[in-house]
Image (cartoon, one colour):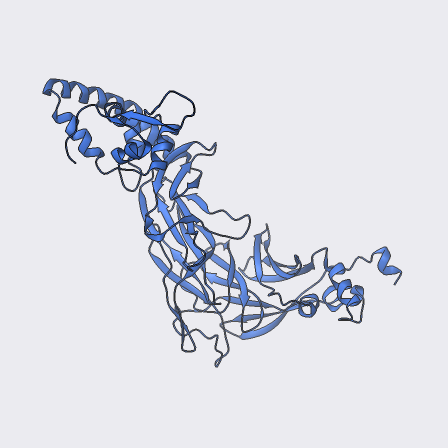
Length: 457
C-alpha cells in the first residue's frame, strides 16, 4: 500500500470502503452498528458523507473492535499495513506507551468479549453474504463473510418450520460450535447446499458440500445435492451431525454422518427421497431413523439405522432399476413400507404418501404420511425394552371423512366412510429385516366415532 498523509479526507462511501478494503454495505453497517467515524455534509438530506483517515485509523486500533473484526473470514487487506505504517511514524517512547495501554485494555476487555461469544451464541442471521452470530436476545456476537465464489447465498430452503442454524458441542470440549445450512439465491442454475461450521468465537472449522456420485442399474447421479434434514446425535459428551441429502431434480437420496472435524461418511442410501431424521436410544445402543418415500414400492418408508456403522441401502428388487450399485456396506436393521390410503389412491391428482415427519414420544415414535390435501395417517410405534419397534396404532387425521365424502360425490367410491377399510380395519404395512426379508405387519385402528350426520345415512 502506498504511503499517504497522516490526515486525509475521504469524500464518499466508495472512498471510505476502499480505504477499509471492504464493500460499501459493510462500511455503512460498521458506521451504523460499530461507531465507524463518518460525518454527514451539512445541508438538506443525509446522502453525502465524508471521513478522516486519521479518525478511522484511531477507530481501527480499538482492542475490542479489532478482536471482533478479526472473526471475519478475510480481515481487511491493508488494515495491518496501516497500523504498521502508523506505528513506524511514531517515536519509540510513544509507541511503548501506547502498546502498554493497549495491552492493559485488551486484558480487561477481550476475555469478557470472548466469554460472551462462546457462552451465548444462539442462532445466526444473514445480511447478504454476511453470516451474523447472535445471542438469544438477538445481540450481535461476531460476523463471517461467505466467499463470493458460489454467488448469492441464502439460508437453505428446508421444510417449513425447520431451523437452518444450530449450536452444539461437536467435539465434547465444553465449547459450542455454530452450524448454518445455506443454499443459492439463483434458482436458474441448480446448485446444492453448503453446511458451514464455526467455533464459538467465529473461526471457520470446516465446510461440507455434498458431491457424491451414486449409481443405480448403470445410471449415474451426480451433483447437485440438497440437504433436506439435519440431525444432531448426542454421543457421549460429543455430538455427531447427520444429514438427509436428496438429489435435484431426481429421486436418489442418502444419509451422511459428519464428525467434529467435518469428515463425512455415507451411512445409508434410499431409492427415493428422504424427508426426516430422528433417533432412539436403548441401553447399549442408539438408532438413527430415516423416513421418506420409496419409488419402487410407491409408498412411504421408515428405516432403522445403526448409529455406529453404515447401513447399506434400501432393500430393492434384484432386477429393479432402483437397486443401488455403489452404496455403503451393511443393511438397515429394519425397513418399513406404508401403503397408500383409499383416499390417496383415488384422488384426482397424484400425491406421494411420503413419511414426511417423525416425532419421538415417551414410549416410541410417531410417523406421519402425507395422504391428500393436508390429511395424514399417523403410525405409532412403541419402543420395547428389547430395542424393537412394535406397531401400536394407526390413526387417520380429522379431515379424512370430508375427503372421503368428496370421493363419494365424484362416484369414485361406493361406500360411506363408516365402512371404509382404512377406517375400520387394521392398517397393513410391510417390514424388511436382514434375517427374514419381507413380512406383513398390522397396526390396530381406533374405534370409529360415528357422527350424527353419518348415523342418518
